[in-house]
Image: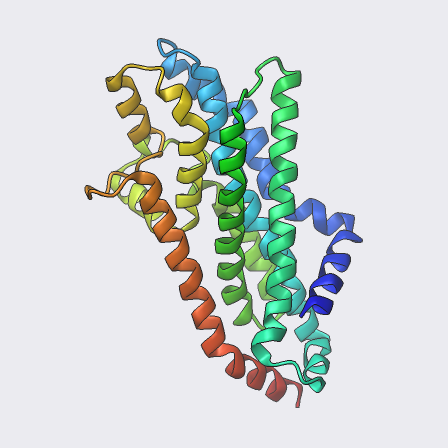
Length: 288
């Protein structure tokens, strides 16, 4: 498992084009925000203190989720490439179980997703510092953000492992990758505040598990500034900007997000475990 993970990480890093395209979804979100979205949203909250910083942090929360999703999918694409070239089958000659073999791909994708989140996070911090709009975060926020990154990488990787386990060709992989890159910004709430959407669009976002990592990131990043506002302003922004999806239950927004992410991750892992023998059997039959 460790050997396969190291191999996959190496193959990912030695291909700069692949690295760039795995981050393309994140770059699109970031530059669309700078060019079109930022000023439009900030102008709506001119009477609110620190509005620019709040909206920058709002964008960052979704950007980290997009990064985790697209980079883990790109890294997991090695599974499909190995299937297509029959290398995946050759690994079965060893005594490694099917599930542990898939875990090698899972581990490499998880690590890549986590590292890329950290790099994008640092990039955004440096960018806004140079732009004289520093995102001043407390030590407690930094400490809290890393476990959320771990959980987001876990959720993204389990989802993509399940997705790639049923993909058979590289052409299908590229098609789904293009669709994911295009939709990831919308599904994580990166382009439009959820409060500005109609009920149908809100429900689509609420049903996408990675949107809850955006909510969790935003809750951690924005809460200290929201606490400085009046109760009315803070309550409105939590709902409008997607920190709280307003499920009308007694649990806190952060606990709801944590519950959704953990349950979805374990559900995906369970499905992959149950399907692992079938996946290998299907791949063997395709080779024969």
